[in-house]
Image (cartoon, rainbow, N blue to C red):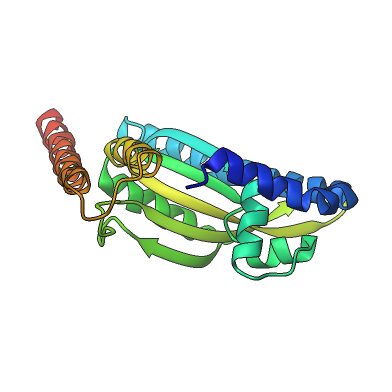
Length: 222
């Protein structure tokens, strides 16, 4: 089986002439995606601050952002049979720019999601709720694709961003599960996969209990 490093090497080597030819246009598009990620991060930091003032706690533990690598972009374009062009990347790939929001409790996920989608410059493109309906392997997360404007010096441009909402426990599990499953080539029906699924369920039970503790602690204060 070809490892990821070799796959990335062959992918980037194959598309290197195209990347060299359209280097400036490609870098400009990636800059727009970075601007869109900054816009989304700012929105969440404002919501986090506002919630802290009202409720004396921060619902967001951390915010992570990532831009797809050229290797990942080219591989996905080729795998899906899309034309390789700057316009095609922007039109067909919704997850070039990604934000991962790590929340304290499951209810914080939905509170922050709803608050974001109420903003009049945010357009919902797609929503997948793997918290309420987890994947077969136990994966939980709320996924959004949104479109929003970025304001440049002489015009406005609409960009898409993928957002993943997870609790600390969901993110911890997903990170380790990915490392174990894909780097060690674990099959879906193996004993390891069943144990990972059991861990996912335990993590969600912990999330639920932590949320109850938060609620009970607020009752005792008032």
